[in-house]
Length: 220
Image (tube, rainbow, N blue to C red; front, side, top):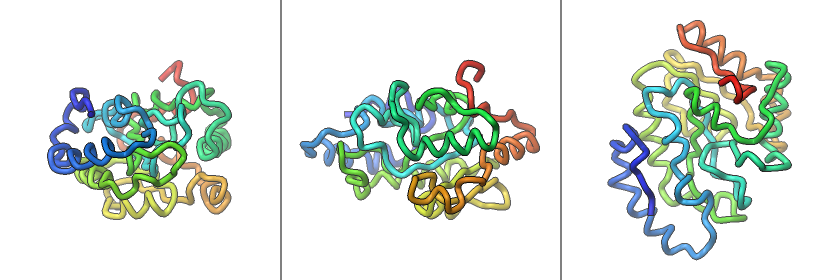
C-alpha cells in the first residue's frame, strides 16, 4: 500500500517491518475514505531526514476534512481556506511573537529547514477525528523520538497529548516548550503569549545552529 522508497534512514526503524504490515491490513479493510492520500502519509519523514531534524512539533492526527491533510502535522494543502482553526491560532501567535506569519496553510518550508511536523497518528477516516488512534501508529512516534535522542533538539509540545508522548525527552539536554494546545478550546490557556518561535530560535542560535524562518517560504 505504501511506497517506502523515499524514507531514507527512517526506513531502518523496526516499525516498518514489525508494525506497519498490520496497519496496512487494517487500512485495506476500512471501507471509508482515508486521509491523507497514501502517497502523503509519510510526508513528514520524507521531508526531514533524521540528521537534519532541529525542531520537533508533534500533532495528534491529520485533519479529517478531505483536501486539507497532506502528511505534516498542523500543515494543510496550500489552497486550504479558511485556515484550520488550530493553524489560524498558530499564525496568530507567530504574528505576536515575530510580527509575521506565512501566507498559506502549507508548512512544508518549515520541514525543509529541519522542523519535523509529525502526527502521532498518521491516518484518519474522513470526518472522524481520532478514528485511527488505536491502529498502532504511536509505535512509530516512540521509535522516532528514541532515534532523535542522539543529540540536543528543540521540542514544541502543544497540549497534553504531545507532552505525554514526549515525556521521556530529556529537558536538561533538549529544549522542551510545553504549553496549551493552539485549538480554540485551549489556546487562551497558555498557548497565546508563550512565544515558542522566538524562544526556539534563541536556543538554536545559542547552540550554534541556524534559526528557523517561520514566516516566509520565499526566503527559506
